[in-house]
Figure 1 (tube, rainbow, N blue to C red):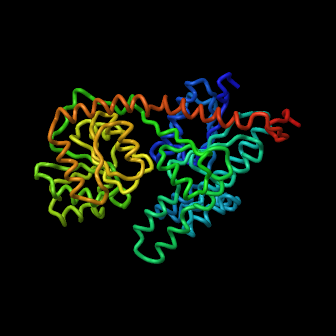
Figure 2: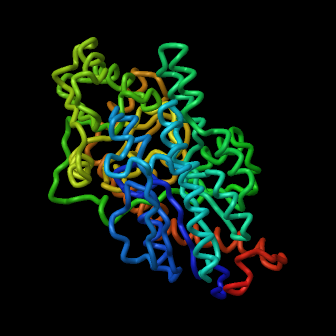
Amino acid sequence: MPENGRPSRVCFIAYRGNMTCGGQGIYLYFLARELARLGIEIDVVVGPPYPDPMPFAKSVQRLDNQEHWARWFTRDYAGMIPRDRPTAALNPLNLYELGASRLGFLPEPMAFSLRAFRALAARLRRGERWDLVHDVQCLGYGVLGLKALGLPVVTTIHHPLTVDRRASLIRDETFRDRIGSMAFYPVGMQATVARRIDRVFTSSEESARTIEADFGVRPERIRNVLNGLDTDFYRPDPGVPPSQTELLCVGRASDPNKGVRTLIRALALLPSEMTLTLVDNNHPGNDVFKWAREVGVADRLNVTGRVEAERLLEFYQRAALTVVPSRYEGFGLPAVESMACGTPVVACRVGALPEVMALCGGGILVDKDSPQALAQGVVELMKSREARAELGRRARQRVETHLSWRHVAAVTADGYAEVLSERRGRPTSTITSDSPGH
């Protein structure tokens, strides 16, 4: 182990690894890359959809599954039984995932954690060693198995699943829907695992408080390491002049936590030349179109549909302002992405957004759920092009200083060192301390 107490070799486990499948894929890729640049050997054990090539990793072990839940979600019921290998469905974990998916549960974290436990135990028996295992938002019971083997185990929780469950309950229209929301999220399992492992990393003080309250994790075992951003990608472009009339919002109208309906109502209170670009699903059934018609701003709304990262970057760079009308955020990544591009932000005073805005200094906060407050905030920032440019320059500098993946990796590595220091000197007779073959 290096003199600074940081580990020499870390194994990441993540039940989904691709950067297009959610924040955990982005987190896994960039944090692992920067830790490798710090000299830590990185192994990755990951489920589908798999990450992009990770040449900085010592090894990447893919753990297959039948993707039953994804097929259930897309109503590909016939595809849930593989035609080429129908007997594979009888594998105990595959059968569990099949049954749980059909009953409306989310089986991936539990099943993946058991597969990861089995895979790492086999590698330990062959003589491989890790100083620490870093779980990325899985928190399945198999993670406790790894701890029982004597491995120090930490996890990352950007926000607990209780937040998603509360948002789902708000959307639910029937009693059956509410029962489904209560059953779907494996809150009990994740809370149990989070309370028993060595450390929980999170991305804001707000998330830390929520993890403590909802999962019962002791505050001294939670560490806020912030969240990272690819500041080499999200950057200003002097060749792209900012608009003087275009607002940008990145958020799903279907998620009540994103506050998109409030923003649509605020748009109706703004001067008629102001337009809104919303990065969201552009299916005609999206409620945002109905809301825009109701308040007479349908002709001032552009819903982009799914966009590639390069296109999203262009939206940030050319917008006059980015608006974050959320009712809750465990971090607020669109606000940070915007400020990294030098574009100021109007955000609601909720969740972690006050922390993020204070850290970066690139905009203003307004009251949540208030179209009038949002509209007033936009008007205030639109008064001076020079003031917006200065906010953007300051925010860019602060994002680079505090929220680059390089900085987050260094703080995370120090967190690893704390865990290892706490465990140092503990006697153990586990598989991790035996000689190979004993």
